[in-house]
Image (tube, rainbow, N blue to C red):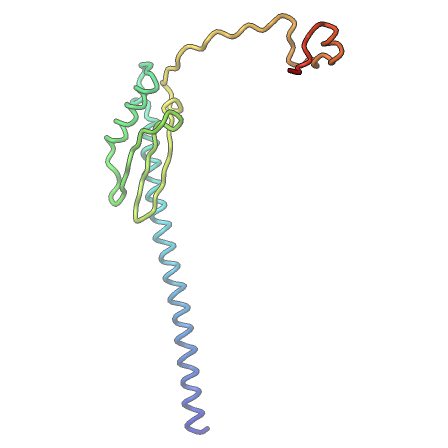
Length: 161
């Protein structure tokens, strides 16, 4: 083997081993980042579960029947009384009537959000239902509509203007 062949073999070996090491280091870095991401997700989910267990606490609900707005205030106060886990940021928002309570948690650039309705946790007194509307005698939602010639014979308009 000549010196040129030995040098060329060494350069090829060095280049291929460097490329292999770069690929392996990239794979390990991706694996470590995925592990950290999974850990942050677990922290956020644990925070949300602890908040939800606090919302389901029977001592919090009490026996008094409160309006939904009063129950919402009670839930917000209960959540604000629980300190967040270390490294977790938390924001409690009172939203519109369709989603009255939103909880956002954040850790390491990841966010999770849950929406809660006070009625879902019980104890929310609703206004009494309105009386049912009377149904006309002889009305059936399953009856077929009258034929156009029968409606005309009975003196009903054709629906044309």
